[in-house]
Length: 82
Ligand code: SF4
Image 1 (spheres, rainbow, N blue to C red):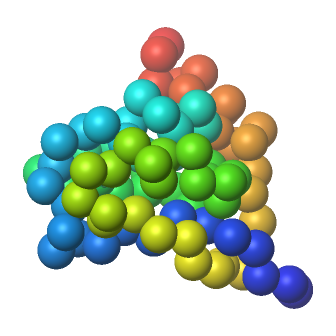
Image 2: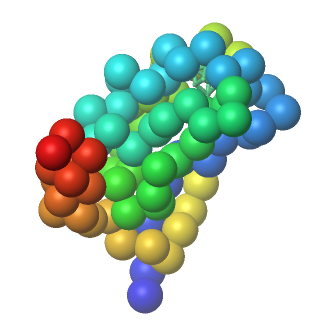
């Protein structure tokens, strides 16, 4: 399986400000334990819309073999809001 792009968060650089959260339209990011984290790799589309909003330069683009699955995100969001 080919690799695709995905964001990688440098935990040491992340200050937990949360500025990246609203800039991820897929809802793939949450602050957990004071740090930004991917809720699930399958939610991240790898386009990096959040990158330019991080004042610490803590987000970069990496590679994964995990497929993006936006329908999984919609199911997750539906369950979360119910
Ligand atoms: S914008 Fe950067 S520093 Fe702020 S929570 Fe997101 S990754 Fe961390």
